[in-house]
Image (cartoon, rainbow, N blue to C red; front, top):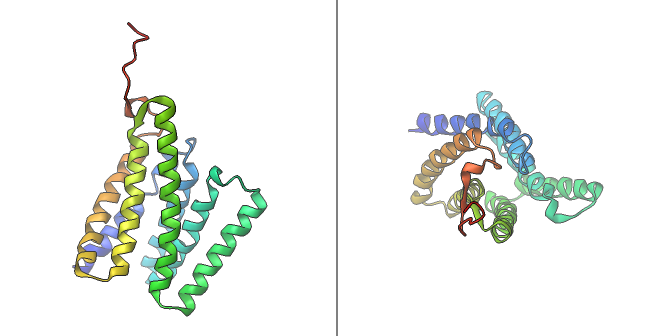
Length: 198
């Protein structure tokens, strides 16, 4: 059972390397790039039997992604300080306090990222009167990650089952992001009929 569990983790991290190249010139390139680098580091950590250091890469990735969004409108230097400070706090919490507090802080960063994606999605829909399936899938991915951390905090049997389900689900999303770009017109669903061509 554990062998299959680690296989899923390896596979998810490996698949999520490729979206970074596909989305290199898209709006969310930092998001995919950060997760790709994190995935590579985590694969190496598991290969060298150091899963605890793999968890530290999550502490660095989430604050970086959260504060890298243009919605914060911060100066680059102040943004760097915010990322560094948040990462240090998370690492100190991990080193000195029970995992419950650490995962609680990670949940906050996951929630920030989810809120930003939801905000972007709503703004895009109101401006273009179209739903971008790509953006919808990013929201689903972030929601899945948020629920996964929450289930880990709950420490229940259901959490174990959901971890397997989310790993498969997020791997499939990784394949989707590696194939399609955010700007792909085929992924847009018009909410209002286009009469310009009539």
